[in-house]
Image 1 (cartoon, rainbow, N blue to C red):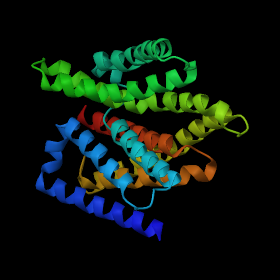
Image 2: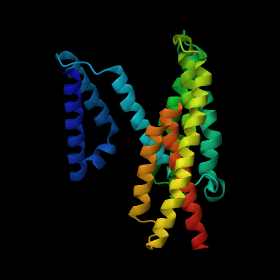
Image 3: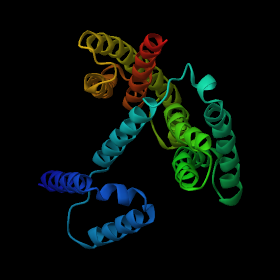
Image 4: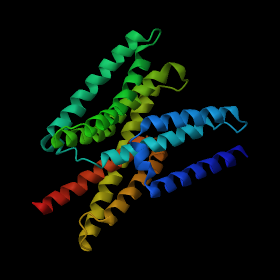
Length: 273
């Protein structure tokens, strides 16, 4: 019964979000994160005061993982990693150099300021802030009267930081919870899941990218709806197939988008040249 009620609530929330998107309200809410945060806190407070069933932690974890996989998939499709240093060296340096430096700086700060905190939880906090910080910086800089090239670099760096920073954050998560779990070699398991997930998602993304590119070429569509549909299909396939080989679904979805965009952009670039 509780599962039915939770499912019904999720369905109503999804329908409400679809309705708000069709009316254009979601774009306005995206520009006001403080309102969304306060509304969520108030809704959670009143939910706790009612007799409604509490959501299963496993269900909440799975939904959060699915959202993170979607974010990784979308972010990885926004750039081509092999040409990133040449096309946008600023975004490349911000993501590859600035990201780890900020992670270490935040971790040291949290370790010093928060008493009784071990180094692994501090690194986990730093990893979460590193991923979320890119979105915060993007919002602040894009809204400022900055040059167009700077805004473009920050916009691209946000996607690169999320797509390439997730494996690091997932390893930090495994290290942080290792003392609290009874699993055998949790760090080794996490590393194998990341490697296996990337192998599965990358293979599917590469094959789907080539196949969709050939199909689009035959019907005369370079970057049409057909390629986007194939990208969605391969992302879903990678997410659901990765656990069958003990792979990480989040990494698999991100790798699928990364290799798909790599293959499609390579072919498009060759045709333009």
